[in-house]
Image 1 (tube, helix red, strand yellow):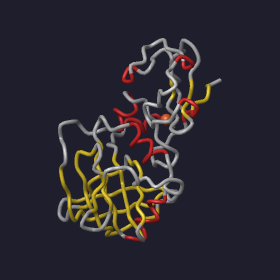
Image 2 (spheres, rainbow, N blue to C red):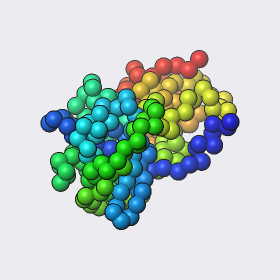
Image 3 (cartoon, rainbow, N blue to C red):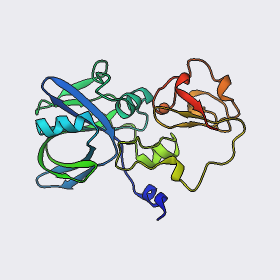
Length: 233
Ligand code: FE
């Protein structure tokens, strides 16, 4: 089986949120799709390891925020690579409360959906929830939606371990080309800093060694600081 076949499937990137017993949580998801038009229903696939999954199962409600292409690494790092068991993700982020009572992220968001669960299926590692959309809104369409392909190709991001689409980097056949200097991997999100490429979006020129990055440089994917990187041997 060529595991890279899975990379040809296309996805967007979203924040799925839920509220339960006065607590809020959410996570970055790439598995959201419309199931029916009448009534309007969407499906989401949620890891059983995610706190949000428990909250959706208990409350029967969830929201989906569609991220745009310039979504900040801090937002993706917080919702994609940190656990609500350790941090309150909603403490310092813009959100509104939907008709269902569910929190809805509005930062870096093109549009959102407020949903009530109509059915769910246990798929082993994940639970597939289908939700009827009871409310939806468009916030800002000036920036294109963030797709998973863009995230992989341009931002060099990988799925976190809990994602249905997670692929172990060690299994990839096409290893990156040999770099000039040492590469470093982000321990939070697995982003690889390659000195041959630098980090042009943050003004880091190709050829810049990891050691020469400014102290306040952050992972372009998840916002982790330099001390969260390890050398790839
Ligand atoms: Fe990272």
